[in-house]
Each structure stands twice: as structure tokens, then as C-alpha cells.
Amino acid sequence: MAVNEELLKKVLEEIRPNLQADGGDMTYIGVDDDGVVSLELQGACAGCPMSSLTLSMGIERILKEHVPGVTRVESVNTGEAGDLYDEYAPF
Image 1 (tube, rainbow, N blue to C red):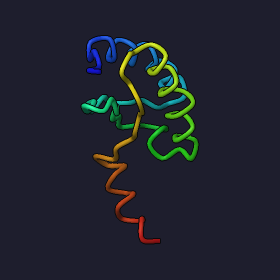
Image 2 (cartoon, rainbow, N blue to C red; image 1 turned 180 degrees about the horizontal axis):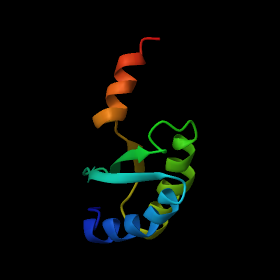
Image 3 (cartoon, helix red, strand yellow; image 1 turned 90 degrees about the horizontal axis):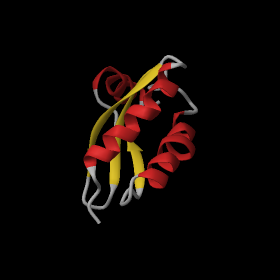
């Protein structure tokens, strides 16, 4: 089942203020044919140890509930946060 990207983006915009209230944000990267939504967490969310919980119990749960076809949400590391992760990942 194809995901309606217009609806997906609308729901993400409704979620965004909750992240921004805690100093974070997200950027929509895309959705694949399997319904996996890719987001980049930014600001306070980028390095937060609770970000995986925010993704699964927050964003993913809401998207699955309101956007037919969404199966999973994953975080992608791009930009500055991704560079820091890559630099320290071996340790």
C-alpha cells in the first residue's frame, strides 16, 4: 500500500511543535515502498538518549495510527549529528 505523502507531511507538522517545545526538531527525508518513514532528528533530539523512544512510542505510533501504509519510522544521521556519530562510533 502506497503511503499518502501529503497526509504524512501534514501529520508530521502536527507532531513538530511537541519536539520543538523540548528544543528539538525533525526533517522529513522520505518514505520507501515498504512504508518505512525516514526522519532526521535535529537539535536536542539529535543526541538525546531517549530519541529511540521518541521515534517508536511517539512519532511512529502516531503515524501508524493516522497514516495508512506506514510500517516503521527510522532515524537517519546526516549533517553535523551524523558526523559526530561517525567520529566517535568506534569508541
